[in-house]
Amino acid sequence: MSRKVLVLGEVRDGSLRNVSFEAIAAGKTVAEGGEVVGVLIGDSVQNLGKDMIQYGADRVVVVEDGNLKNYSSDGFSQAFLAVVHSENPDGIIFGHTALGKDLAPKIASKLDAGLISDATIVEAAGEHVVFTRPIYSGKAFEKKIITDGIIFATIRPNNISPLEKDESRTGDVQTIQAEIKDLRTIIKEVIRKASEGVDLSEAKVIVSGGRGVKSAEGFKSLKELADVLGGAVGASRGACDAGYCDYSLQIGQTGKVVTPDLYIACGISGAIQHLAGMSNSKVIVAINKDPEANIFNVADYGIVGDLFEVVPLLTEEFKKL
Ligand code: FAD
Image 1 (cartoon, rainbow, N blue to C red):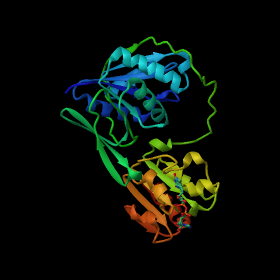
Image 2 (image 1 turned 30 degrees about the vertical axis):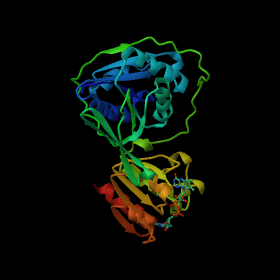
Image 3 (image 1 turned 90 degrees about the vertical axis):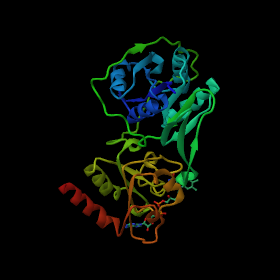
Image 4 (image 1 turned 135 degrees about the horizontal axis):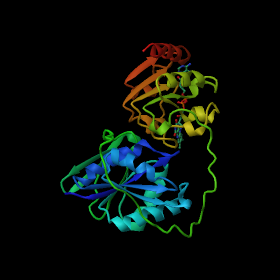
């Protein structure tokens, strides 16, 4: 059953986030041979249309406006709804990111559509598209379908493989006019906390520290290991509460949900609220001096030892590769 599917391209610092390409791949599955239309919203984003096409979108629709320079749910929903009304899609896919989590319910309510959030697997099964999503903090999975109206879903980053980039793919990048008006909030300036290195939510490798790291100073050796592996540093809430690192690094039920290829948990006990954010990582390595620590129950590899000895040793070994 072929469908037309809109996929939102999420732009950060002038580039598309990886989840946009994963959403295109999910959109292809939903489209079942139909058309995948990339959607770009912003101030000056048209140049990114070719990237969406090279990753598999058949064509791209762009909405540009000075008021769309920074994300606001008011502005972006008006822009996206303008595309929906001109394209009349059968499906919509967003990334399950901070932006997607804010925008998707608003769009769904305006369209009176259902919404399946945080899907990790998308399968087309004849008449229906089946979305699998983790529930109960990742302890179980449910499969869901939308039986009526637009098939609308958000997908968890790092779970659906994007298509290979192919520079020979071509397609139209078309700008449409949308009236962005009566905004209740306008973002005048975004002041970002300086953060270096790889984006935590899209990192393939995460070296994460808990209360066992004992100080902000202790996190330096985790950063060194993360740098050698081309990864990012994360943390448990225990470490954030203790002031060892910023809350933007917190992983878990009330922090970020991550699915890297490799998650190295250092001095983290493995509380259920922490597992909710990382237990779907592809390979989990736990370093803890307590052999009874709960983190070992989800770990693929466990190292019972002092992280202040083990982490520098790992860094030295990885440097040799
Ligand atoms: P601890 O539980 O104190 O564990 C420290 C570990 O370090 C121990 O296992 C110890 O054996 C080990 N250790 C100590 N020294 C060393 C050493 N030298 N070498 C090796 N190992 C060592 N937590 C989150 O992480 N994310 C969340 O999003 C989150 N949300 C929450 C939401 C709610 C509503 C509540 C109630 C709690 C939430 N928590 C969350 C908190 C959670 O319950 C735990 O308190 C927290 O995860 C514990 O952090 P920790 O593992 O770093 O610390």
